[in-house]
Image 1 (tube, helix red, strand yellow):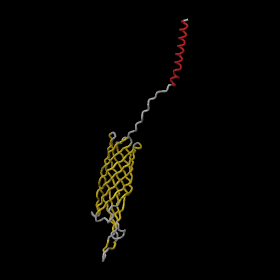
Image 2 (cartoon, one colour):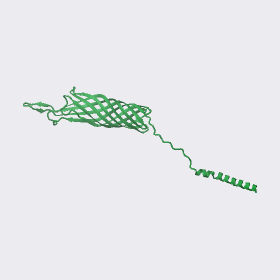
Image 3 (cartoon, rainbow, N blue to C red):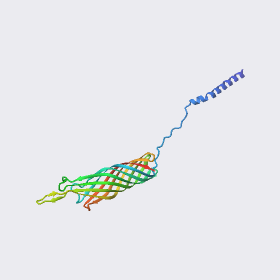
Image 4 (cartoon, rainbow, N blue to C red):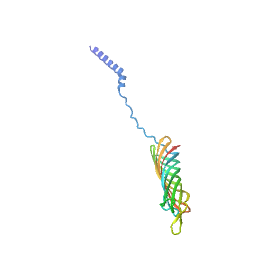
Length: 249
């Protein structure tokens, strides 16, 4: 009887082991698989080192603050403003997040303005002072901080440009008994090419491989220009706000 019980126990144990072996794949499939955590994707860093070219456009405002015997009374400071468009080229060196560079640019400008004397036009002593800045350019160094696809920078350097003044006056011809008669209006025009300095800053964003867009502000000081044999001295200053696009090689 003991042998019979041992055989029964062995049979039951064998059956249980067989059942476990047959159902193991099914039970394993029901156990959720352990997945490795998904690593955060780091922002793609932009390589700023290299040569680039681009174009820009914007709006400028400034003054041609004039003094001297050749300036009509009350017409000393024409406020000049208008749009401009130009091109630029430069080179950057990147040291981790620090970016150093050089850039040169040239802009054609439609900037102009006119100041008029208090006397009515065409009367004795009346006159006007028209100012223009037909072009302006810079040669600058840049220093900035790169944060992923964005570059924040400051810039300083040389500026050059042209200031043009047109003075129109109506002479006064004395008459017997006092007073005067207005003569024929006379117009004089001269231009002076100037050099000075500039400083400003901007932000540049790389929106596609090799392409970036920028917003920039520059203050330009071209010093004091001399017109009409020194009878007019003009302090030339300008403010430039512009947007641009660059292609990096």
